[in-house]
Picture 1: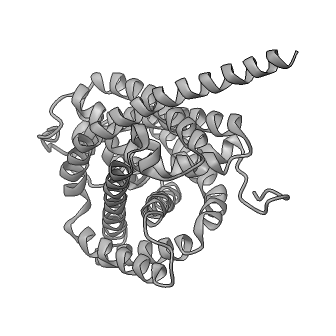
Picture 2 (picture 1 turned 120 degrees about the vertical axis):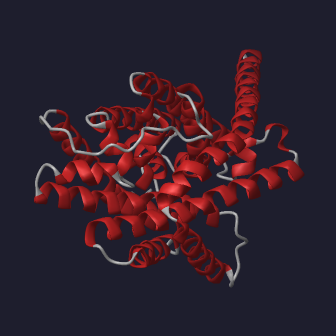
Amino acid sequence: MKNSKTGKVSLTFFGVAIMYTSAIMGAGFASGREIWQFFGVFDENAKWGVFFVGILFITMGVMTSINAIHFNTNDMGRVIVPGGNKILVNFVGNFMAIILFTVMITMSAAGGSLVRQELGINKIFGGVVIVILVLITVLGEFERVSNVFRYIMPVMFAVVILVCLMVIFKDMSDMGCDDPILPSPIAPNFAIAALLYISYNILSMIPIVATASINAKNHKHAIGGSILGGLMLAVLAFLLVMVLQKDMHYSQALDLPMLGYSAKLSKPVHFAYASALMLSIYASATSNFYGFTTKLKNGPKKKIYIIISAWIGFLLGLLGFKNIVAYMFPIEGYLGFIIIIMMTINFIIVIKEIRNERSEKQSKHIQRF
């Protein structure tokens, strides 16, 4: 939605929530691969991990919104770094850009896994489709990104929730798999896994939530949207855990386990879920790659750099989706801890500045009378 006075995008709280979830709900999330690797493998402790992550999604989303609104910027370094040191702000911003670029790698790999698992064709085709769709959207800047997500995300949410409920309430027999249930060696228990999950996901969330917040109708819509987005993600993660633990060996065996479960329901349901998964891959790749492009210098060659970067991500994605989730994601999570600590300190400083500004205004108001 555009503001009629300024001509700029003006998001409601629901629009902000949609942008938030689009950054997180990619192939790893909607396919069940991430939720399985970081939560489902830990059996009963999985639900505690999801509860903890849900609280952190809300908390970190609100912190990002407030920091971005206070500084009136979506610059990742400024939102994160306390004190505003230019060297550190630039370093962190560039580091974040690299992290966001890796999402293009994982999503192009996911697109390849999807078409190979579903259609039996070369995974290169799926990756190519994702890259082309992302480039078409991102080259239209934030307005096109937000407009596209406003339509596809509600449909995707509805499909994922409906299929999850259908699987949960269906009596499914043993799938016949005996793959050993092993956590990633980098995330050996549910507490570490939950912390790593929120850590690397926060890195993807910060630029898109910051951009959505400064493009919101007002501060209430920005902060309320961050809260709603965190809640939506927590509910979906909980439903996915319930599905994936129906047959833990079966979930372990597949790159994209939710597709396996949807196939046990019916062909139409399976097709609907596969379509929703492709949309989620596209949405996450687009939102994160857009965040990456905000760090590229404006100029006549920017679009060329965007196109080249996207295709480099595609080539790296040929390494395979399952391996990337198991190893790259946890490593990014460890690197993200310091980002979270810095942003929290920055948030505390911002809150103090806001209180001081309010006190000064009240003092001036009183002096007038």
